[in-house]
Length: 199
Image 1 (tube, rainbow, N blue to C red):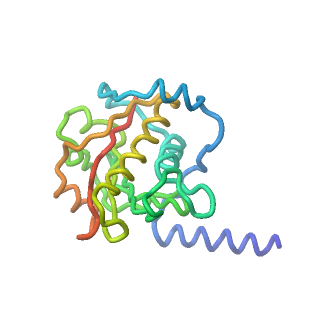
Image 2 (tube, rainbow, N blue to C red):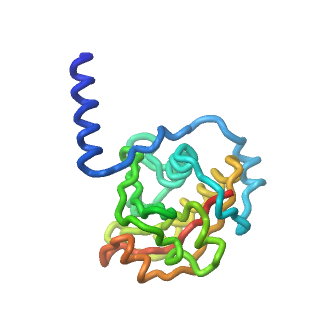
Image 3 (cartoon, helix red, strand yellow):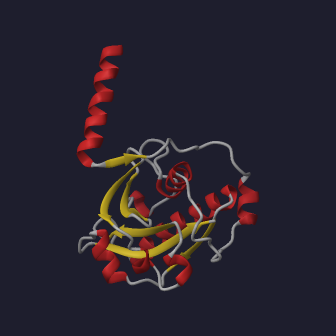
């Protein structure tokens, strides 16, 4: 049994090296601020310090809150008819990555600083993290359901940030076409919003 576990671990490591995915710390799915307190503390904040840092653990927790897997393949948010059409990208000063909820990892899709494309407001261009909320229109064709899914994920990011002492705001003012190209979106993947996070 021990040998089998070692082999499986080696295969997983090899897979990670092959795909170039960075496995994030295991999300902390218990504890934290009581839900009612987090809802009361939730707010949009734009006074984000460009020098502030969002840790890998915080990023892992935040992405899980927005689109993590809970039980029986279900997610932390509901989607109409369980279509699960959401795709998340993380935009930082050094790279753009796609979130893989199945193994809680990030796959780099583009190296470089593309934060300026994710925002028309100066504060977001220098924030440590911007999260792009994208939907797969082949999985969910109805725009109102797509918007609901992205909105639910955004709200969970708000709640996580409220209890973690982070600042955040969701935005629709961005350069959709050039950012979509950087994200490597296909014709059936639609960029809706970007959520800025920092301190």
